[in-house]
Length: 401
View (tube, rainbow, N blue to C red):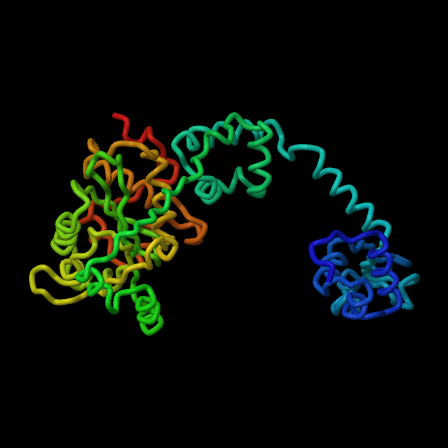
């Protein structure tokens, strides 16, 4: 099949001739090497309507008369090939190759003339979207929350922005994330570290999830600040909802990670904690090697979580949280110091990130999606709250006091 190619006039003439000869759509599709659905769409898009004639005022005197034709109730839904077409006094739909080709050329010409927006529409888009874009909101977020003014495709939106139609430019949108350079460490693992990885490697994770497909999976990672500073963030992200928690760590150590899990176990009721933290997937960072303090309840020692580690230098195995770190970098660009960032600051940009609508969540935000996994009181206990769509800020102005 000649997929993704426009129909030519010759193709349309062959379609009309085939219809006039009462050939099936399948026969025509084979003859012109086009898909069955493409031909049906072409006919439906370009068939022409003809009013039934009213001989001797018969139609006027009989308003309840059914002027529909049985032929039009079946594929290909046009009158081509009907022997009675010339003298038919019923509703008619006919496909003409020449008119269809002229219509196609007109549409193509109009699409290439320039922007398909009135000055009033451009003004409205500028007035509504400019302040939101300055807050760092993404294009997906804007499309989800303002479909009334963004009623054209995203590729068209990008073209308009690149061509300077609006007041905002490509530089006003969040930058493309720059991933950190891969580390090529030649240091061998200690015997203790090798023992920790037994039954906790990524292949073990895959086997476990295949046997427990409904379990909640949490991806865990850290975000580092400046190299000469110890401050960093601990991030936890639920795959099902893309909801992310962010905690400030004073040091990138097992003690600090254990402190956070102790706080979580204190704030979240036992049953909710056990359900939310069924499986954790993280990388091979040394700060995650205190396995017992992550897998077990600190108060009783009961194991409630299964911890697994990604393969070395394979952060793509937990790609969802890596991608979500991009939003943190909108607010704190690479090279920013985390030293003066407080937990209250973390809560602030965490809630803005979790209130950003996502296409992958059917237009919902991670906060709204998380409500399917736990009750709202659990989120409130973690200082999580919802921010209205137009109030979401995702750039460095968020933390300016």
